[in-house]
Length: 505
Ligand SMILES: [Zn+2]
Image: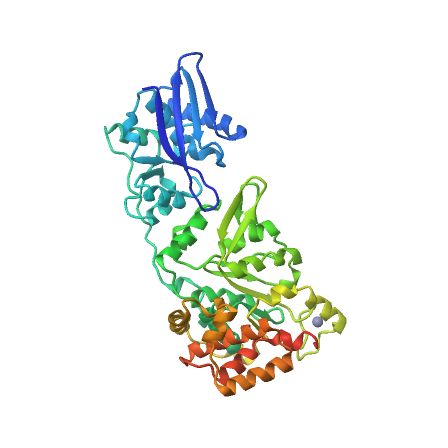
């Protein structure tokens, strides 16, 4: 045998396309050539593989070795193919049986000693291998991720020699990854009961969670906007296993990888307003996910919204509508999921204290208008609910907190309302199209009269009108009401504060 083929996997976005590592041994001057890898990666990989084989007690063949990674046009990042290349060389030189390789796929970077180092995207690769009915052999440090895929989808090892010996069949040194014991439950999340006072803001969070509605909080510094927003993941319904796997797969392709403690937790991402467009939406020469993808199935919170670069915010429009982002670079394109609950916060004026009873705000009308106009109209137009968050008073601050509702109680109502929406339209209310709004958001005559007055007085656009109806539908769902009533519409109109205030601060 002078030719061996080993299965491995590349990583592009969230996909793990198959790569065949072909190794050929021929006569001639001893050399190692790797084709199909970017030039810069080749040399390092050669050095690692050569040293790892020698240091694992095997012989590095003194022949002409050609390694081909096919298909050639896939983007391939360095070290992840080391293990497959080393095994290919061992099989081609007859040191391990080539036939034993076909039921497995291999992923792992080698250290010079032959120890296996972690790779990115272990979870997507494990899932992809198991769809091909092969077991993925990967570094033990990636075991937590691999354990999330189906049972017996993966095997882990700590050293090249463990893998080689297991293939020879002398001794089985690789093992099934053990699932980390993670306690499920929301008690690990910040609880809404920790937030004192703020009944209106809490109500808004409940409605946002129930309908999947985006939310903008306007209030002075210290009003607790960040604290409120961070409670939102705990109010959302628990994820299904498929959703949790999606979230874990995204974490798996980031530099930090998947942490077992994150399993089943909805993400909460709060990037700073200095974040670049690439950091927020993703990008780079090999496209990497941005904050909006890391927030997939969870909450994206942008504090101090007017301070964000307007161009960066404009890019949010696409994922807010479609739940995904397509990143195009000259050579390749990647698509990442980005279905998140969008929550933003801003001060009411540049100093932050406009409307404060102390009268400490001296911002001019002009300055306030300029500050607020930094928000992009089209983005603002896509936010379902606006609300003012006032600083809590000393009395509320010092009152006992025992009576506060816990997140689990609110979550139970959210789940009920979401089920009503799913049964009715097959989606959460925030996702209803204009046509579906007309079909599913049926109002009582009183509610219609109120809406009609609101359109005139607030000068609502068609888009704004539909937003009020969607939010009113969610409020009705929380009240278990089949038809939208006037009280539901009134509450929903109360969440369009910027339309009323922005022109007359
Ligand atoms: Zn001010």
